[in-house]
Image 1 (spheres, protein in one colour):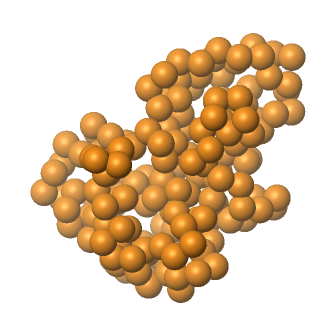
Image 2 (tube, rainbow, N blue to C red):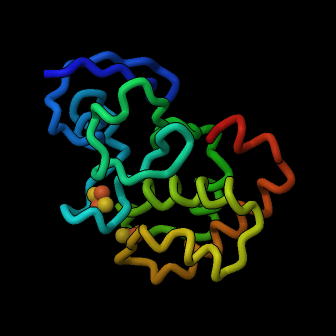
Length: 164
Ligand code: FES
Ligand code: FES
């Protein structure tokens, strides 16, 4: 076992992990961050996407030990029921989800995309979230949601820095 310490959604956790433990399993099973989900065993779906030191990563492709000393943000750390992140709000308003299983990863990938490109075209949104799969929506409303969030965040330039 190896000791790892990481700050997750603003709280520092120190735990013993096996070297083979994946970050997504550590988040869910040790830290109770079950908002981050596993949708595949091939690193394809993106449902497990979190931010690692500010960058979107598929947490099933990272060992927990690799996140030692890092800042991790999950879907549970970006907003709350009464104070949704603009991307969460846009997914809700634009019906960017159906079953919702892909949504945590989609939202985390979208926030990272908007940080890099605050005003993406439809094509750029599609390219930006191409690592995230959705079986339900056909993507159209997801793209609309990301573009709506971009518009809202353009008027609230402090939002990403404060919450992402
Ligand atoms: S669970 Fe990580 S990519 Fe599918
Ligand atoms: S809403 Fe069901 S997989 Fe995307």
